[in-house]
Image 1 (cartoon, protein in one colour):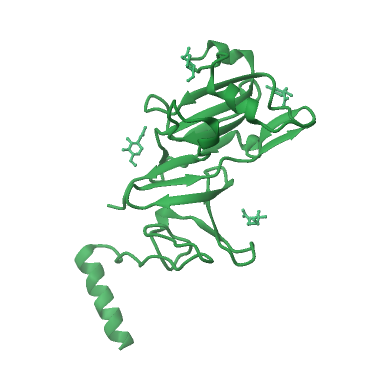
Image 2 (cartoon, rainbow, N blue to C red; image 1 turned 90 degrees about the horizontal axis):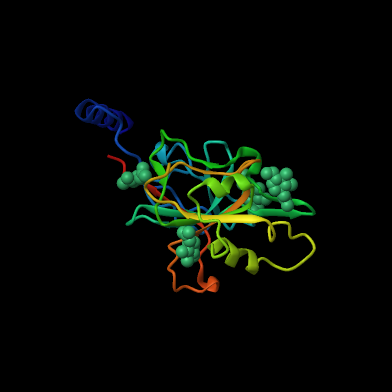
Length: 217
Ligand SMILES: *[C@@H]1O[C@H](CO)[C@@H](O)[C@H](O)[C@H]1NC(C)=O
Ligand SMILES: *[C@@H]1O[C@H](CO)[C@@H](O)[C@H](O)[C@H]1NC(C)=O
Ligand SMILES: *[C@@H]1O[C@H](CO)[C@@H](O)[C@H](O)[C@H]1NC(C)=O
Ligand SMILES: *[C@@H]1O[C@H](CO)[C@@H](O)[C@H](O)[C@H]1NC(C)=O
């Protein structure tokens, strides 16, 4: 029985030149893990590695790891459109600080060797920008969508992201689709909104960073 299995597998390797693809992964808590995503070596396709965090009382949280090793929570996966949405990092506003939690890693960077990139449906909002940004093609005007976001940030003492220069841009195909960068001398915090339509009120914005993936060949 076992021997038959190995013989069949061997024949398959000889026939196709590689080990046949593994099946899809079991649920993470109560969250489906669609193929080709892989939460461990025994399932999915290893190029589509994501992480199942079960420390939240058994309610699974799927996470996507950036090239720099930062974990972003996965908000949704749409296998038919080959898109997933990850959560923008938290804003850290404390006294004089306006940063995102991935600031020390200079924001989000995807591994270019993996089949993911940032989709063209993200509007990126940058906060606490330096004057250098005024010479960039980004929209840092008083009409920028970042002002709408700043106005929506909660009132309170620790609100360093509310003031200061801010900008927005559509992550379109003219830009590198592997990074959203923050740094001293640029902007130190960001968020992203998926598929903004001009008529949408700020209450309807859906915050997230949409990634797309290439299907396994
Ligand atoms: C897993 O989830 C818990 C609870 O939400 C969180 O505190 C922890 O940082 C997560 N672990 C990773 C590696 O992201
Ligand atoms: C804004 O960023 C600059 C660095 O570019 C930093 O020195 C400053 O403290 C930041 N301001 C806030 C409110 O975080
Ligand atoms: C900046 O963005 C606002 C809001 O989308 C838009 O109305 C305005 O025309 C833009 N300005 C420039 C210079 O792109
Ligand atoms: C991102 O990847 C998709 C396929 O996954 C591809 O069609 C698209 O051209 C890529 N975009 C950029 C800007 O590289």
